[in-house]
Image (cartoon, rainbow, N blue to C red; front, side, top):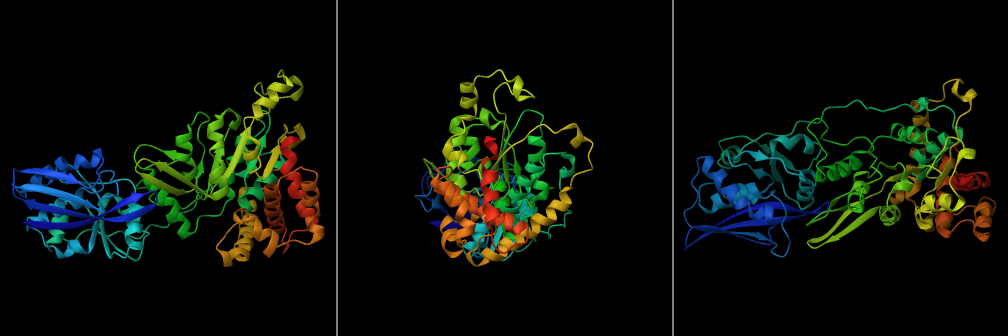
Length: 502
């Protein structure tokens, strides 16, 4: 009896677990038996692996082949195990050395002719192997740019199964990733294109500086989408750690390309208003795939015409907004994806949405019901609410407003101040700070707290609203260069929170 071994990675969300692949050549009728909770795609790998080995000039063992993937209780999904299965079979047949396989994690799908094909989730799989202490990983060569920023583990790339076998035998050197090229930052549309709307521009700057949620309400053509699309251009670039985290999610979603193997800028995700709940928060058969809230992690989720979205989709945003992650339970396990994004909502005031309020033909009940699709608990998680009015003719001919570059400098400075203040606790923006921290460790004086305490007594805001108003007040103070919010800052935060009802 001959036994071969190889190793791969099983992903559950962004977390990975090392999977040991064993191949046993036993007595009995020739055939291939695969055990270890494989899904359909993995069951079909028996035929892919056998054809790939034969087409590489190697001999498939004419014996009973049993392939086992351990841990046996962990569901195995996809074709990521193909090259590990092929290596384990050839190891059991004694045609490749065993030692390199004991120190290497193998990730990749096989074509029938032996080509190593790319699979989704290679970046999080490599990061999982690194966290588990492995010293080497072999991936499809086409995916090397995606993992070029990962250090602390040797990464090799193979175009063909023949290359991998030659490397195991010491005859061939596999490819190594090149350092990622320096990319000039692209900023997208300029904020100078937005004329007038001084109050909305101020709210957008505050939202960018503190990573706060924002809702813009106004008639069609007033500039809601135009303004929201400029937000990503005034946000600072992602840090190296954030870039790897966001890129890992995009790798699982299949959104990375050879031209853009790493996400360096905050994502701007704008799903259509007909999107489903599963595409918003994630879902799918087997292990759930990341949805829009996770793809927008460390960036912006923009919901245009949000009042047209199904109520079930809107309500699904509550937990991600509060906790910064989404937990998706499916039959094969629970996937946890980070989802710390800025929510930007845009809505018309009513279904008919005329250019002038006086021309509205909707009854009061219809208007209430239209925006009433956005529930109170969800709206309570939106820090800034602005009603936009059509610009006057004078605004259209006025001097050019501030550009994105000017605003971006102020936003970057405010974020640096906030990151330095919260560095001890690992937070980077004011929007992440828990309420108890604001009320105890960084409690404001009685005079500065008075506006929010008065609003709470009158029932104008909830306890959650108090916390969110205090976060906005800290951001306003950071933008103005003050070390702590004043009463004017907390009053301004409350004012901007209620402007959506104006």
